[in-house]
Amino acid sequence: QVQLVESGGGSVQVGGSLRLSCVASRRTNSRFAMGWFRQAPGKEREFVAAIRWSGGHTFYADSVKGRFTISGENAKTTAYLQMDSLKLEDTAVYYCAGDPGSILSTIRDPQYYDYWGQGTQVTVSS
Image (cartoon, one colour):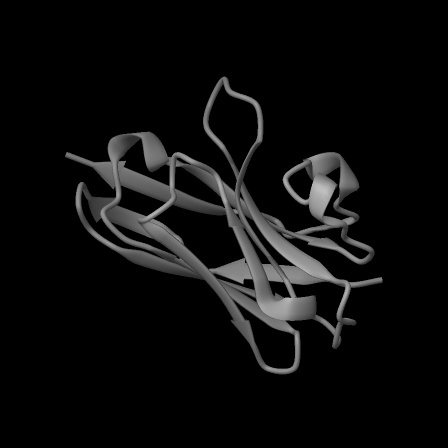
C-alpha cells in the first residue's frame, strides 16, 4: 500500500501560480507513475498530468500543456505540479494518484490508478 498526501492548494488570481506537492509514504519502483487529476463541481474527474519514473516521461492534458509542469524527486517519493498562468477554468479539487504498474497507453485513465490522495482545492478568481 502507498499513501499519498497532497499539499499546496489555495486561492490565486487569474494569471497567478501555485505549486502542488504529492508525497508517497514509501519509495516506489521505476514503473510507478504519479498523476494529477482534477474535478470541478458537476464535472467528471479529468486527467491533468503524469510522470512515469522509468525514463522520466511526462504527459499533459492539452488544456494545461505549456502552463503546467510535472516533476519528481526524492527517490521516487515526491511529485510536484507547478501551475502557471492559471485560468478560471483551472478551479477544481486536485488529486494526486499512483499507478504501480503504469503503461503508456493507460497513463491518462484514472481507472488504472490504485492509490489516491485526499485532494487539495485550487481556486482561481478574477
